[in-house]
Image 1 (cartoon, rainbow, N blue to C red):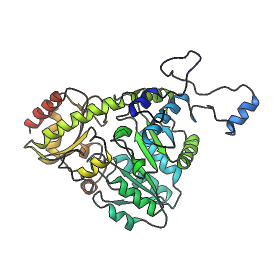
Image 2 (image 1 turned 60 degrees about the vertical axis):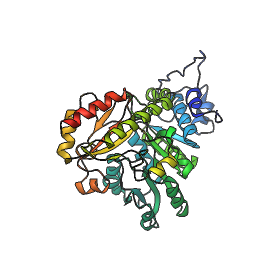
Image 3 (image 1 turned 90 degrees about the horizontal axis):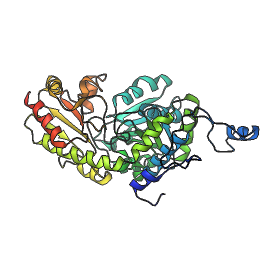
Length: 390
């Protein structure tokens, strides 16, 4: 399968068929599996025989989903989770010990920031942040007990871009584990492992599902690291359900065609916003005005479906703009077939202090739009009429 194209692997990878020889992978809605005799049961629990034992550990549906993402990302192994944040937490909890330290880009998802600042410190695990525009400062933040370097690219919600190749060089020089959240790009647009990442995390809830139906997360990468993550998860239980795994695996069959259209629409929306008099600044990776446009072109196939822009007038204007939206959805999700508009300062990143928000580029007037698959002229007309009310 590995020598076929992305789209072919996404559609033709199938790990299990029953005695009925079904064309589409069936659902394996079972909590456990049976054994022929006591010896087979003993060998399975001692891991002498690799087979399905209990769906908290593995299930044919989750195995298929994992195998597809591993093929797409060029990863040795992976493990799937009930949500994107359970993948983030389990990855760090499995690999870090009390007293360890990690370095992260300052611009991260609000819940990830909360994990780093409120919960991991309870176990004496601390994080130092570097600025999105100062990768070279990473070396100054590395301590003798530093174990992981973490980043999102593109970042949430400001759609900033980091040079993954440079991060890979730094981690190899200092013998660190490089973990990249690849949620905004998906495996179709970007493969961080090619640039030196050891592990890649996805919130499959977003573009991988693509229709706002189910939650899911996955971490893929080096087999030795995934082994530690698997053992932690096997005991703590953040398992992806077989049904959600089946939905996500089927969604991967259309990922390429969906993301192509998402990106095409997003580019048109970004160009419209950039020309509008009531917008201060627009950030979209494949706009030439993006500060890291050249890096985005180097490591991404297309620019993704998320556009960030700043409405003139601050937080009140941002809220007024959202109140004027008629067609698009107001939601905290992204990556849906439906276009979604979010005001991070008052929603997804409202728990951050104003100072912390400004440090990661989340101004009071910043709006994040996840461009969907509607006719793009209808989306633009909706944005246009909402902006006209400011």
